[in-house]
Length: 252
Picture 1 (cartoon, one colour):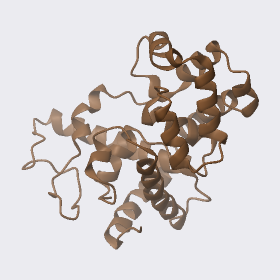
Picture 2 (cartoon, rainbow, N blue to C red):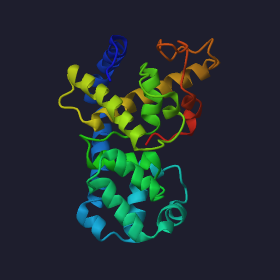
Picture 3 (tube, rainbow, N blue to C red):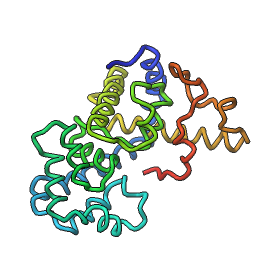
């Protein structure tokens, strides 16, 4: 799998602003990402997981950005995660993070175990514990990759949760290509957190543009939309469907 020259050019165009952002207010965003990752990683060390309590499960879930959609997080943990039993949760998390199988197998297993973290939650735990190996897959890359003209993933990846470990591995592979492009354009030794910051930066720019277009009374129909670049066989005016819900998405 590789990027086309056109896709590399689109990334190069956006990296210029991204690097300036990193030197300005992006410094605070980067620090927040790193601190967020540290909070999560310290909750899921092998030692912590071996003695994981129900309170530990609540703390872990409450720490995830993926949990922000739930106002009653305790209800969700009780009914969607701990309903399988604390031992099952403990064993599933230990296998996900420190098991011997491939990431595809371990991702599939936590789904089989019905630990209700969802694709975003599972990827967030992996991402912040092993930022050189695993990507974060949530609304940010789902919005930004089509905007950049990245069409190496099936369209369904942008509409639905990840269905299995094979799908997650494909996401890792594609985002890894972008990570390498960041390095090619002067970002030193980027990991997947740096890639996520790139998505964060562009996501907020897209949202700002969308609000600006709305305030000018323009529609988001294919005939008037100008946010997305030319994209392979797609309509050049295409904006991913997730943008219609941007105002409902928290920026964390």
